[in-house]
Amino acid sequence: MAKIIVKQVKSSIKRSQRQKRTLEALGLKRIGQEVEHESTPSVLGMIDKVKHLVSTQEA
Image 1 (tube, rainbow, N blue to C red):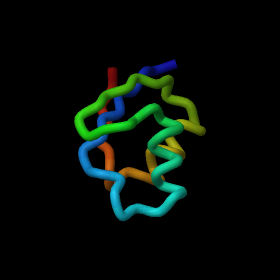
Image 2: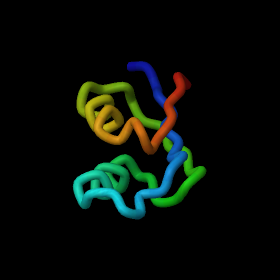
Image 3: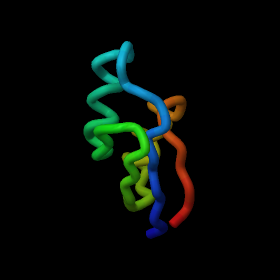
């Protein structure tokens, strides 16, 4: 599978608890942090729910 790099670019302050938990499930805790994931449908779905808080790129 392809790899995808996810970087948090905006704060989770004043966001819904659901969005905060999604960021936590992706492994993101602070602005500027990057994590690498497999490009699976479940991960892509989580990224789509918080696309306004993160940026992505192919690894």
